[in-house]
Image (tube, rainbow, N blue to C red; front, side, top):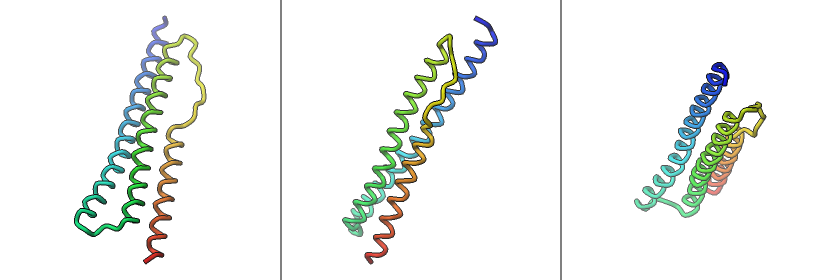
Amino acid sequence: MNLTNELARQRNRDAAERTLMAWIRTCLSLISFGFGLDKIIAAINNRGRGGGHAEMSVRLVALGFVITGVLALATATLQHNRDLRLIRSDDFLYRSKPSIATATAVVITLIGVMAMVILILGALAT
């Protein structure tokens, strides 16, 4: 095996590791935000100020963040393992693959739109 090729493979493995670590941070943020949002609403409700409709809508948004974080992390882990397998192979060729970042951004946008609709409907109801 050629030293230049092996060094290139090592750089690719290192880049794959950094990418996975970035996904772990992003997904942990999504999961933590969703969990924290739910706990804040629970604390407010324990003080007797919460409304049933508002609680359920916030819980749905919080659940959306947690689910998005979990699914994105699972997908990023699978993609990382595929990338490592490709790097190990002797006939490594760059192949275009679906973007986890784009899919996550679309889902977060949908969660944001859902939250906006809930807020608008809540404001119109009062």
